[in-house]
Length: 347
Image 1: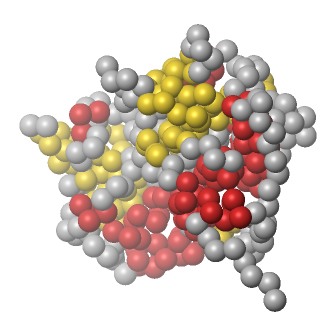
Image 2: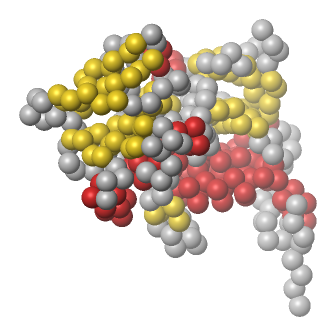
Image 3: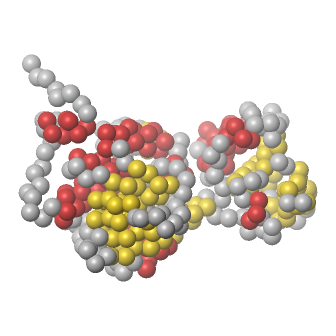
């Protein structure tokens, strides 16, 4: 067992609010480690609506979820946060010295002075296709995420789902795969209208095959998936040969281990005060959709506000003898240095 990684702050959740929490802590000279159950940075923005427009980010008339995450990552570059992805925080315990010991599902451990829970509505886990024999194929021929798109070049690909992720990848692989078959249980899709229109155009051109139904059986020979059985809504079955199966049934949010950490929980959300956004345990803060308080609104911009106040509260918690001054990025030489920018000149 390796010694725990020591940190002033650990952020659980790498969505937009978690990323902005890095920024606010960075301005106060608090370095962080960020842990997320998903395999990539971005939370709901990347997993659920990467290319859908967002209109309510202050001073940004419109941006996609992907663009928002990209800009937040650029904003926090000066603070060099360390990310630990694809692992869930499985345990959290306060130690005798007041610090918190966090253990992840990948057997990593952290000893943190403060903890920020920015886990959205919990740890997102992909909704699974529950069929006999599928588990040994996951990561080999069955995939719930696409990490290396080039891997599917020249392959016969079957994609299940009717949301943005399913259609986005169907459109992408139509240009590089040997064949693409999209399977959805009904002929209505929950995706961007332009994606649906483009998908139907490609179906008409024969570049995508659309099947309305669901997979009911896997044909596996010597550990290799060769065919899937698809039943339509009338009960008719057909066998479909394939190389790889991509499943995009959406994500299931679960509070998971957080529920057992001794925090005050209200309707599967963490209760906080509105001065510090501290939980019922001093030194642990909750920001974004995971928290609840009177008047709570689940908006990204609200989470940004919460992150700022939580950062100042944590700075005071870490240095109770030090007066924490409010400084402005427009005028503060100290913040300019932290951000690596040249101070503005005024004529």
